Image 1 (cartoon, rainbow, N blue to C red):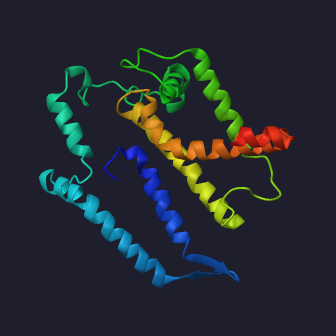
Image 2 (cartoon, rainbow, N blue to C red; image 1 turned 60 degrees about the vertical axis):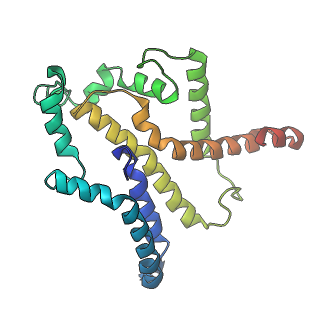
Length: 233
């Protein structure tokens, strides 16, 4: 909660997963285990508030109610930033009247964000060999496509039932989408920075899907056990 706001998708999705652990649909009626929900929820909330609450209380007090620090960021930028970066005169795609689609089509946002998500150094001036970018792209695409390969017997998350896995995958998918949506919106409306680091919060979910997908691909297309097992290992 004290990191980039792009990581807030994990907070939202963790709350959804937690709530659905104690909410069940039985005979078209919603049943909620309030005892465990409130008991465990209270413990988690206390631990979280002890860890981070002081920061937001501090911000609320010294920044006149701006507990997230977003308004004061703009105020200080207006005072201390160089002229070209002052919010009042800083040009963005938004205040120039362009659409998000226009930014994505007519700028280098997608290319630079994708490359720097993998590796770019020296103030976004030094990249790596093209084959490394293409290699990661192929790996990710194969893994994501592999997720759609049907399995008779699921070889992952075997302790969960199908509905629980669907819920988990839905939240993992949200954890991939939310950071990128926030990254695109920030570049469009506030400060154009096509940098993959702002999309890094999706890394855990992305690699989760990619690893399962590759596992499915290998099991489907590599038939010989002696070859398949060393590859999977």
